[in-house]
Structure formats: C-alpha cells, structure tokens
Length: 593
Ligand code: XMP
Image (cartoon, rainbow, N blue to C red; front, side, top):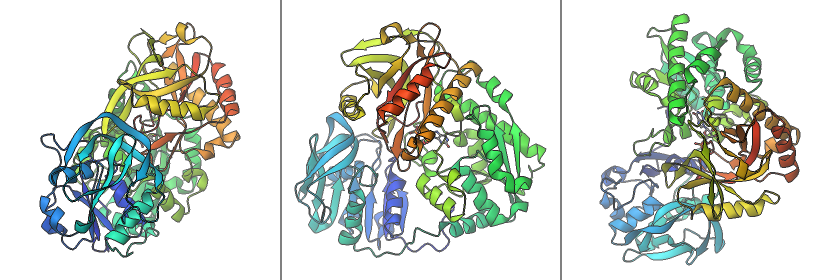
C-alpha cells in the first residue's frame, strides 16, 4: 500500500465495519483538509487515544448477528467524539442499551430527512434535507441519555446524539454525493464537535504517488498492461515519470471485447511513448475461451484467467520474468472494495484484477498499484496534474473485462412474467442492497418514458416494495409488443458481441453529437437476451450520474434523443426492443453483468 511518506499523525480514525462506503468517508474527511486513517473496527481504544474523533462506518452485518463486526466498548467512554454511520449508529445504540430491529421494509435510495433538533451536527443546515439511505435495520429505542436529532418517513431515528458524551449517530450516509448536505454534516462533526484543524492538502498528490512508486519499485522495473482507460493510463504515466521510460513497459491487449475504434484511440494516446508501448492481438483467444459461457461470474473468471495467462506469456516474450520486474496495475478503490478486498465487505462481483493468480502476485509483493486508494474523481485530478489531455481524462469509465459484462446471456428461452406492476423480464442482473450482493429479476413498467421524472419516482417507490426485483426499466420502443416477446437463448458469441458493439457505437455517436455524453457520468449500453422471432436481443440504455461509481442515480434523458437513439437501434439487425434503466445504485449496480 502506497501511503505518503510524510503523512501527519491522523486526527480522525475511521473504523471499518465492512461498508461499501468506508474509504469514501476517509476520503471526504481528507478532502475537508483533515488527515485521516482507516483501521479495522476492533482496534483497541487504547490505540486511538489522542485522536480528535472516531467515525464508525456502515457495514453489511446486523448488530444482533453472531460474528458481526464489533468495536472496543471503551472507545465510547474515552470522551473522544464518535460518529456512528448506518451500522455504526446501530452498533453504538446496541452497545449502549438501546434497541436495534430489522425494519419492515428496507430503505434504499433518496429520502427526506426532517431535523428535530439541530444540535452541533446539523448546525446551520435547513430543517428538511435530502439524504441517501441504504439499510434494513433501524434503531427502534434510543440508548439512555440520547436524544433524537432527525427522522424520515420510514426511519424513526435517522440521527441521534448524547451531546454531553460527544456521541453521535446517523442512519443515512453523509459521505455520499447524494446526501445534499453530507459534506457540511461531516464538516460540523470535524470542526464543531471534534475541534480538528486543517493539516492536509488534497492537491499535489502526483509527487507523493511518484515517491511511493519509487519506494515500492526499488531497483525493479515495472511492466504494465494498459487498457486506454483513465485508471491504467494515469498509473502508467505516474510510473513513467517516477522511474523513467527505460524502466517501464506498457502492453495493450486487444481482447476483442473492446468498443468500436478503441484500439486505434489507444495507439494514438501512447504514440509519444512508442518505445515503452506495444499492442498485443489476443481476440481469437478471448472469444474462443468465452464461447458458450452464460454465467456472469464465470465470464469474469475466464477473462481474468486468460489475462493472467497472457500476462505470463508477455512477460516471457519480453524476458521480464526475473526478479527485477514487477507488475503495475491501475486498480482503484471501488475495484478493491467491491471484490471483498477489505476485510469485511461482502463480495459483490469479482473484478478481473483480483482473480487468484493476481492475488498470488500480490502475496509475492510483485504488484504495484499506485492509485489503489483513490476514487475515480481523484484519479482524474491526478491526471490533470500530470498534464494528460481532457479527451482522455473525461472519458466515461469502462469496465476492464469490456463488453463482456454488458452482454447478458441465458441458457434457455423463458416467457416474460406478468405482474400487477408490469412485466417481469426473464433476465437477472447484479445489485447491491444494504452492502450485500443481489442477483434478481428486472421489472418493466407499463408506462413509456415521455416524462422520465415521474417514471423515476415511480421506480424508486416500487423497488423498495417488490421482493425479488432489484432493477426497473421502461420500454422505449420495440419491433414487437411485449406480450409477443420472450427470453431467448444467448451466449457470449461473436454475433452478439458485434450486435452490442454496433449498438454501443450508435448510442455513443448520438449522445456525443447532442452533447448528452458530457452531461452524464457513464452511459453503459447493455444487450439482453429478450426478443421475438428474427430479433432475439434487446438493448438497455443505462445513463447514470455519479461522482465515483459507488452510488449512482439513473440519469434523465431528453425525450428527443431517446427517440432518435431508439429509432437507430431498432434498425440494427437482431435488435427487438430498447429499454431504459430507471434504477439508482443502490439497489442496482451500474453494470448489469
Ligand atoms: P458497478 O456495476 O459495480 O460499477 O456499479 C461501478 C463502476 O465500476 C466499473 N466496473 C469495472 N471497472 N474493472 C474495472 O476497471 C471491472 O471489472 C469493472 N466492473 C465494473 C463500472 O463500469 C462502473 O463505472
């Protein structure tokens, strides 16, 4: 792990109870100019003496479950201010004699918070505000001496405090961008409650990261597989600067799973470093290995394994298998945490750079991940510091395993299901609910998206009520009515990948031309095996707004653009319908898998 060499003594410690958001809290604190560290939740209180404050993160467990993350109880009587977030609030209530119960229904997504008593935590903030919730359990009885600070419609204790003992809890997530005043709430905790001073400058990270690279690499050289995405390009460029072009090699593997025109774009970017960069054509190998594969996790595993084999071969071919070389990677923080990379986070999906063979390299200390603690927006900031062009830095993120994660497969044909709310599509997609993975069905609403605002509201309300559904879409247009469509058989073959690649290129072209591409954070285009005779697949449009990919809102689309995109997509061979994904993250993930 590359940490700054001259980091100050942390004023704040975030105790990690396994939440998706743990490092996001730490980063928000640093962004507020306060140096902060992350430690396991069980860290003894004695080691935390001298901190100005402690934050207990959220996590996937329930406090009443056997083996759920604990904290050293003494921490709550040190006199040091403590803020419990989500699971952290529940744990605090549980340990101090309050009661935590499983809620009747979960609360995932946006909610309106009503402040009952501002105390210091909500000082200067409006009495009603939008917050982001992701939980099932709630505090039902306050611990003695605590006061309720806020509630929402479905959460009686959305914030609580024992001001005399400097203990605070919130059920919502102040660290995510969708909590409107989240930064101010954290700032109130740091500066009004803990009395922190500013001692950390979030700018000027490149030099610090380069120093870390030199320290980790020592005398060794770094071999990189670059994808042309922001992450690997920034990591590769940092290494070039830290070690000089003579000690760094980059290889781009053309997997055949790339978007249209991608390989040419990447060649263009690395033209200036042509001595340190090469393209390896592995299309046949990846497509061969993926033939007849249906399961999303198996896809990732195969792609990851093939990558590792190619890495091995490339290292051989470049005669770099000896000890003087290490492997560089552009892994960023969300990749680590969503693969269960921290001690307690539940596995949501396996990322290609966390398959076992890479794990072994990590254990041998032969992997260098210079940006592994950074989030996407921080990586872009470092890229700007490095002088990389905005055409590259402002590209939408694209998953390493390429179009494979956006090409859904099905082993068998199945009919659409009818439900009171609409049609249940016979495909399943990955979601994240209360910090755990879900793999559930997709509901298609009856209504068509003319005004998308009301559809988004309808979808958000429905998703919390329907069991077995983690995603809601609307039908934009189709060649056949829904009642004539069914789930079809489809694997990860060339025909379907080409179909998806062409659809993706259409969407990209139209959304670039209209300026829409710049207004959203990411715009996945997904192929699903649902269709009718002669047109076995459909396309899902998934434009999202996000800051870092950890949470996301389904983005509104201009009706004219939606109509135009659907028109061109339905003219493509094999495409039966166009759907529009209305689901936020959580409960759905951004990708469908
Ligand atoms: P999800 O689907 O988990 O996606 O909400 C969050 C962000 O991560 C991207 N993603 C990946 N990026 N390798 C990557 O480099 C991967 O294997 C991978 N899988 C998902 C996804 O596109 C989104 O931006």
